[in-house]
Image (cartoon, rainbow over all chains, first blue to last red; front, top):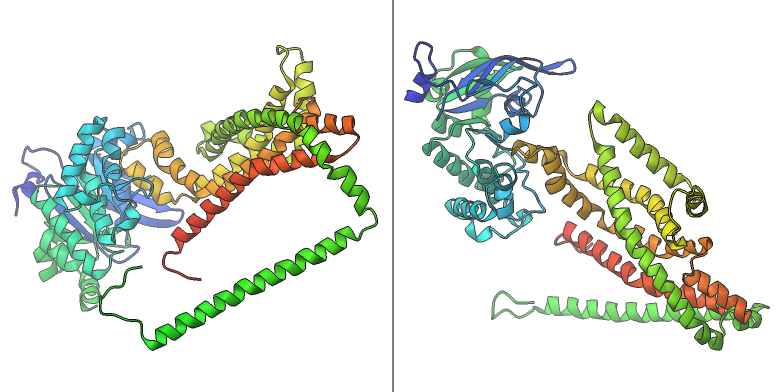
Length: 259
Length: 286
């Protein structure tokens, strides 16, 4: 187990978790989507959220990014309560990178402008500096030549890699990945997952909702299984998949792994 | 078109298909020429056969009167063009403000939302002619403003009416931008205003460009209505010339000039719309 995970254990005077959810509840009308979630993510840790559609994975990521109001509980970002309505949500989101299932690149901006938009507008990086860094990042994913191209001329895998680079361009403390391979053709999934592995190797702190079980097992430090808005079971990735304890976990894994 | 392999020659089957398509094309052209000719002849016979055909020709299509009236009408059209220029700028500014006001969320903005909604309701409902009278004769009557040219008040009236329509077009565009775009922008830390300016509005404007251009075409001819305020524009000039020659040809001249003014925009609108449609159905022939 990594030092990073040890750091969150009580008793050790260490930095607070990058992200901490305390008894988070979120409901849409009568439908309770998150029902008392407790989760702490340490620096450099990669946490995979798994569970059936509607289990609350995406909502959990959206609440963490303050894109959804919570109905109870607290959300802490490096120890600061960001669920306090007095907190400037835009400033919080600027510290978090998010990637969505449908890429959501801006179709009216070329690839380089997509990547540099937040650097220039939110982080006030001068245009030249932002573009230099943008090109550097595009080079790391082999898409430097596409800097001037528009998103609709790129393959799904290329678009999603640009979306990831856009999210990390302003060096967020936390990266949220919401089923980023679900909309991709099978042969394009690999290139996107490879980029996530690279980010992990560089020490990124990542929370990702995913349907890719082998990927979750290989890349995540910890796996969290959600069902009906609650955390049913969590544990170190390999252990989790080798010997799940809860019946519901076993049933879910049997279903997804046989398919 | 480039052919993929150099040693490829179209097969007999393909050659036969090409020959067939060519025959079809030739036939289509001949049919359309034929039908156009038939329609033209029928129209000519019907119109020329009416009892008043000769009288209409002399009082509406007198070439000498047309030539004599042309300079004055053209001079008037120049005023229409200037009014159009300033009105278009005014309309875009007012319409964007209205559209944005109508899309604001939150209780604080209720008065703004309400006012914007009331504005668009009222000015889409009132005939332009009535707004022209009220603004052109009513506002100066208040004695609040320095004496202004009738064309100035005409421009104001046109901006009032058209911005209500154009605001609705902009609003439709803003609402047609997928919410996930807003979400992605906010997730990057852009605030509400930045998201609107840099992400939502640019996409909204692209979506509604054909509709906006269509409104511009409508506005190009409605600037002729400022003549009711006494501004000597193309319509008013034609009216004066008509009275002078006791012949209606100057109105026809003004009409043709308005068509000439609108025609480039109309063609451009069709071209833009066609291009957008082509982009949306890549690779399809139907």
